[in-house]
Image (tube, rainbow, N blue to C red; front, side):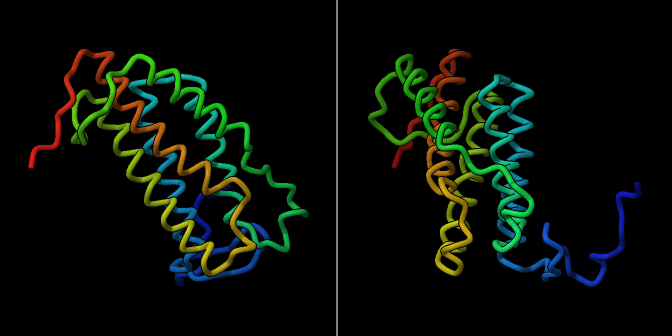
Length: 179
C-alpha cells in the first residue's frame, strides 16, 4: 500500500465516511490538534511510561476518529466512544499523585526535569484542543462526542499534576512565578 494517494494535493481531504472537505475545515484542524497532542504524549512516554498514558493515547485516537467521521456515518462505522471511565481513572491518578505533593500556594512556571517539561507541553496542547473543541461545539453542537470536553479538561489537569509529580520524583524544586 502506498502511503501517498495524491488525493489531497488540491487542499481537500476525505472524512471517514468519504465526504471531501477542505484541509482548512475546523473539523480537520481539530482532529489534527488531537493527533498533535497524542504525538507529544508519545514523547512523554519515553520519559514516564505507564498503562494510563497508553490508555489516554487510545482514547485520544478514539476522539480523533469520532471527529473525523460525518455524524450520519458514526453508526455505520461503529466508532468507539470516549469512555466516561477514562475520566474516573484520570481523576484517581491525579488524587493519588497529589497525596505526594506539597500544597500549591503559588503559580509555578513550567520547568524542571525533562519529563515535567514534556508533561507541561501536553498540558498546554490539551488546553488548546479543548478550546478548539468548544469552538466546534458552538458551531456543530450535535457533532461533539459525549464526554470529550470533560476528558480534555481533566487531561490538562492530569498533565499539570504529573509535571509536578515528576519534578518531585527527581527532587527538582518548582520555580515559583515572581512578579
